[in-house]
Image 1 (spheres, rainbow, N blue to C red):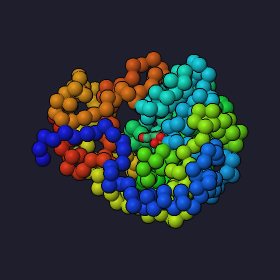
Image 2 (image 1 turned 90 degrees about the horizontal axis):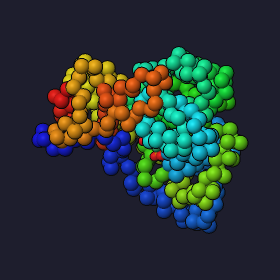
Image 3 (image 1 turned 30 degrees about the vertical axis):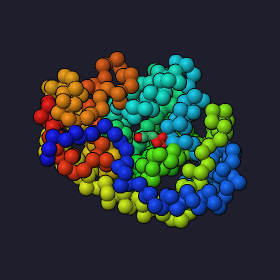
Image 4 (image 1 turned 60 degrees about the vertical axis):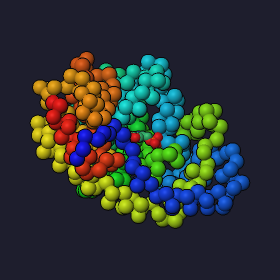
Length: 363
Ligand SMILES: Cc1ncc(COP(=O)(O)O)c(C=O)c1O
């Protein structure tokens, strides 16, 4: 392979993942079938038929569903609603970089609780809860961004039990959950006990990020408050995209599209797992059973000085690991400089092999 640039920064679907023809058919039908609603202001909690589809899938009443312009917007609105200036928000450490930024922008002290291969360290979470109760705990329980970790069943039970005992919200953000390449689903936190759980997900990774359709499931009072905040922010949701997704679901096209995506991504996932094992044997690797990301914690003696700059010189683009780290829970400096996220969906198997080799040569 040449020394062409390899990009390991973006957790995005590649263009070949988009169901372009099907989506354009659904946009066409959605606008033609219901123009008086779809092209008008209104339906603030989201397009009614899409809420109906989601209500059936998740077995919740429609007033517990809010659809927004991507799930990040909903994270932002929920933060604006729940966070008082200086309040604590807990995340996994590392966590999704944009979520950390969003919570901080809303005034939260964002505190990272160490992440293990089977999810957040629950003993450390409990110790942190003894010190203070956060506005919410933000988790990505399935195939986490950035690390790839999945929360075990036992820890899922303990997290909802702690949320009940200490009375705080848990956001379970699950955009990758349906992209499982191996193994069995674990229950969502809300399936164990929905009392304190806000579930967020999105069609970004299953259809297209550009359409900006994400949703949250939460108790109706919270949905009502966040809907009002949304209405005061953007007046009306973007109904044509929501209607196109409703049409897509109504036609029964989502499940086959997910199967197609898994076929596309599975060889890339295998290639990344294999490359990390063979090229970075001394690193602590997180190899998930699904999703978009493998990650590694490099050994303490690895040369991480200016790693991003030296990688760039080698035509390898990496995200700085520290971007995924919130404030530490115990005063120790975070170890973000040793953390490398390796998204595998938007790169070819050759690029994966070559890119991981370049990374190994820098250490
Ligand atoms: C964990 C997680 N949550 C939310 C998002 C954003 O999703 P959306 O496009 O629905 O705003 C992403 C995107 O990468 C993500 O990884």
